[in-house]
Image (cartoon, rainbow, N blue to C red; front, side, top):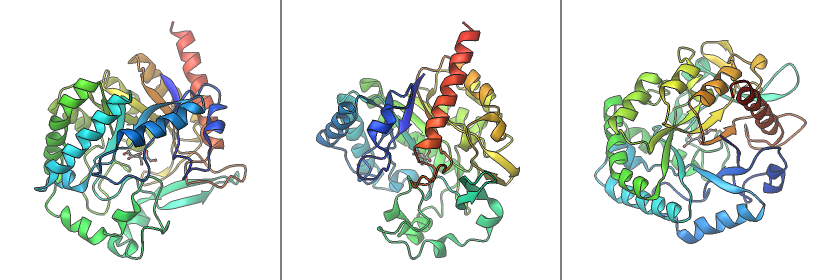
Length: 355
Ligand code: DNO
């Protein structure tokens, strides 16, 4: 594995490449062209500029998170081919610039969802949290009505604010899309892009839906072992793979995380590793990475990745806000750096004891 760190670009991120480089063992960043919109072609020039900036700081781009998918592709509307053609051109341009990993998601309307951005824990740190009871009280169309593209409102990092301002329209688009239809549209998309992935050796790594169940009545399919294996089989190409995100699959306590990892041998191209602390099955908060701070056995997760001979990038995931840091929710420097160091320690210990 290669330890990496997510970076939102010099324009948006309070964390600098120089800081990232000083985290022991971190050699690569995971980034994206943050000002691009879903459906647009990424030019070679823009990709190259991003790459040169990262390389000048002594790091490299280990993967893209994300090249977002236009809603026309997810709902399977008539104009989807135009957007898939654009996606293919972006993949070709990434491949030409020697970038071989693309993380994406197929979540309708919303990316990952939390109900609190700064829940206070007894030690004074704050964390992102989710409670289904709070979600059930919200009318999503009303909640996002006033969000414009400059507003940070309730928008989480990784969400696309311009989409939130079109919320009603988006909900209407998904009216006739159920789980099977979403699977079908995903299959259509993957079948069209696989020849390009084969040609440029690009690993596509789908990110799970977070939380791993339907939110606001929208279909969500990348949620458990059965569904992800269905997806692997439906387009049975090694370039059709997954981002194994422990914090997302882990939202459903019925998911056995190490077992899922083992069942995906050869298809895990990227890993997000973090812990969650459950207060009830429908209320959880994003604990520190350390096993004893949350509900998951992080050793077993790393051991499963080791056992499947995982060679891709891994990144610590959402961190707590500690030491008075002010940063994007979940994406500060300090706690993620602690996470990277802890995960590196687990990996070293596992590698030495199973040599
Ligand atoms: C949350 C992230 C997600 C992820 C996308 C991938 O912190 O893991 O926003 O980047 O779902 O497309």
